[in-house]
Image (tube, rainbow, N blue to C red; front, side, top):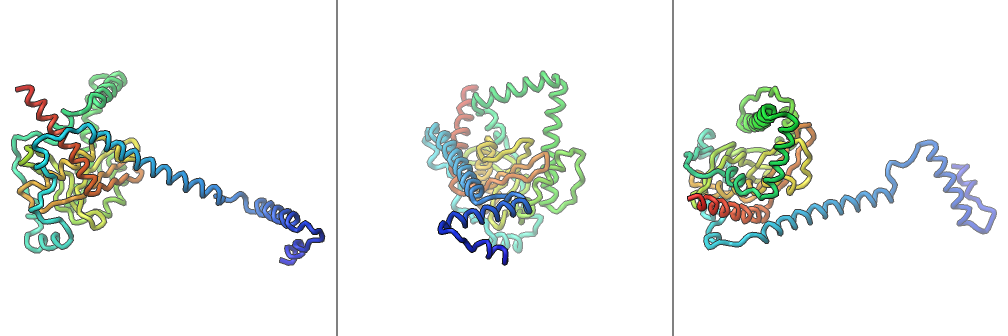
Length: 322
């Protein structure tokens, strides 16, 4: 401290210049002793500005994507009465869940809707896939057949389906309180690791892989999960991926699928509750933390509008075959 004070006693009149020299020397000595700063103020400001820009760009991309999809939609005469939410049903919330748990034995909370001869959500989405998506899927299939051969590709496809089923089975076992075996697929165990933090925030499962039917619109599907996430009731769509999905747009039809299941849950007469928010969760086969995309009520309604377009297109295709 004495050395520093003595250094600050200047003999010249140009104090600012001498003071600058002293601090430069001090900074140089500090750098030699402790090395470079991990992050300067300038670097930090640049990093925060860049992060803010990335978040803003992603939001803008998502909004533009929704606008492009919705701009192609021409409402039909029946759309105005085909609501996603049945207002006569009770909102699913903590109070309602507690009442439901007390009045009905836990094993009876999950109702089973009889299967009917109706098209599934998956079938409708596959049938109404865009030409661009169909071409991309066909090109991928051709390249994989060239690499693996016909038999090899068929085996690979079966394994992909088996891994998807095994992942859903582990999630189902956990949510329903059943013991879960270790999968012989490393990718499935990695996906389970990827989901760790998300699963910890999921509670009070109401529906787990159950059939839901929308009588008014004549379609059905198997909803992955209806539960509470961080205290909020949501419809959950689980997805598995080997590639990073940093935006909801990158999950392709997943939010449309989620909206379709939500509409069915909210209009299925087997269930007397409604849910207005959703969650698309992407688990990764290399084990890194899953991406969670929360869809607000408005976002779900936006994707419901897109689902209505796909459903109407499916009906037009089916009518052309008759």
